[in-house]
Length: 98
Image 1 (cartoon, helix red, strand yellow):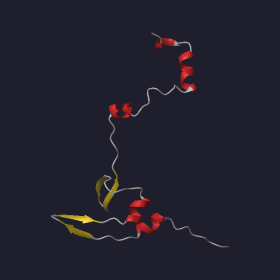
Image 2 (image 1 turned 60 degrees about the vertical axis):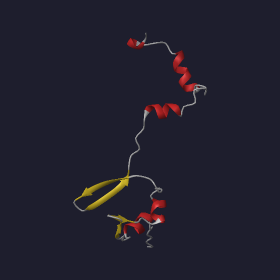
Image 3 (image 1 turned 90 degrees about the horizontal axis):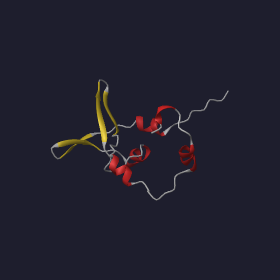
Image 4 (image 1 turned 45 degrees about the horizontal axis):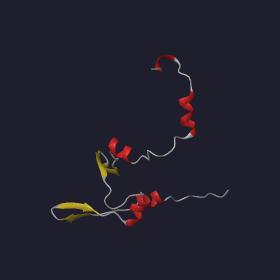
């Protein structure tokens, strides 16, 4: 019987040790470019920090959206897709008719 082991990139990064260094009046940890690439992060991205009993967890911060910004991205001249247009031809059922 032959046993194989797949080494995932997260296995390699979980073994990585990083140093806390002084940066002005603060402390900083530099993240290697390969780690940023694997995590699909870029310079300027925001991280959420969670203090846990066993250490610190960094996760990508959730984007916040403003409805007006999302609507501004819509193409108001675009045709309505056929599957959605079909709803306009259905007969009302129940109390939704006005």
